Length: 488
Ligand SMILES: Cc1cc2nc3c(=O)[nH]c(=O)nc-3n(C[C@H](O)[C@H](O)[C@H](O)COP(=O)(O)OP(=O)(O)OC[C@H]3O[C@@H](n4cnc5c(N)ncnc54)[C@H](O)[C@@H]3O)c2cc1C
Image (cartoon, rainbow, N blue to C red):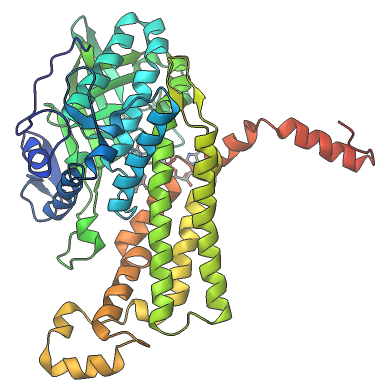
């Protein structure tokens, strides 16, 4: 049982949020900036549409028929808590966990890379890694365990900011301390951290941030840059600098699914010791990084699978709308996109089948490395296929206002309809396609798919370097080159 306090957030009755409770819980002192203004995310028009989307997703967990698939009774409080926070110890638990992830991802059409399910799974990873943290310092281990219970019972939505600000990648914090987040003061009651993190997606909508990596730490061994901790977004000294909102009143994806990306600036922020999970030990940090991410990488692929399915559905409808769906080069493109969907589905099944026990007694999925290595490429190619099929129609569509104008309507119905599709339906499908593959929302998604798992060149290099069958492949190649039969 957690020893930590379980003070509930405003509006919460404990356990998994309902939408209105979740919105109320974000009404706090957080310092969120966007486009030169300090904003209240619960009311600002640039943030409200996405907040409504998130509220709807929280409500959906409680729908009859859904609750069994998305919630379960906490063994400590008896509250109905999210299955995203389930720390699975057996096959049944793991299956229930993934079924819940599919629900979150499907309900948001794969458009929300950081649905709360993602970071909840990182917290499961932190809990799983608690024994190794305890070896560094017993307090770190119990902090990790308590924090897991704390998040689960309060259904906290988290963000994470792992990267360092993009100032000068050829330099190190040894030359310029501001390149990495660091501990600047220590006391028995806690630490003070200074620096910034780039990027933290979903930050303005999150309750807390979890920090557990600084790439600067890989560049040199200064222990002050090794600090794992959690902090509420409403912590004094923490500023959330958002990019411009994509909410443009068009009603398209850009408003409803703009999950936001932010730089987090820690201006001498005090972190109480019970929220510190690791200090100084860079080896434990490097080992732990992969351990924390195991479940979230899997659920990230679940979300990605639903995004690819959305792209396939849109590409297919585009082709039907303008009567090109039977042309060979178009069916070729649609088949290619289908193959990406299937590769990811089969990959998810295989990775799930390769689940294995962890040292702490949980059951974790196998490695997502191969899917992570191709995700950006599949996604970019998917967008390209949508652009290839939709062509000029992706920009030449009437708006809702055009369609509502009586003087134009007859012309639009004649020249802007599709093969067997009215102008209204066709324009909605094409505008959706433009959101996905042409406009800034879609281009941001492309950046996300390419970069969110880290530098793709590094992901692929690591995959090769750690491939367990590499030696055998090399031996076979050597045998073949030397004309030997492979009898092993
Ligand atoms: C939309 C979006 C959302 C994201 N959300 C999150 C999030 O929620 N949380 C989070 O932690 N991270 C998030 N990320 C950040 C992501 O992890 C980083 O983008 C990624 O790690 C790459 O870092 P960078 O963007 O700073 O690029 P950089 O490291 O600055 O790289 C820029 C270029 O320089 C090259 N380069 C840099 N260093 C080297 C080197 N040493 N050797 C060779 N080449 C090098 C890179 O290959 C690249 O071509 C997000 C990114 C995007 C785009």
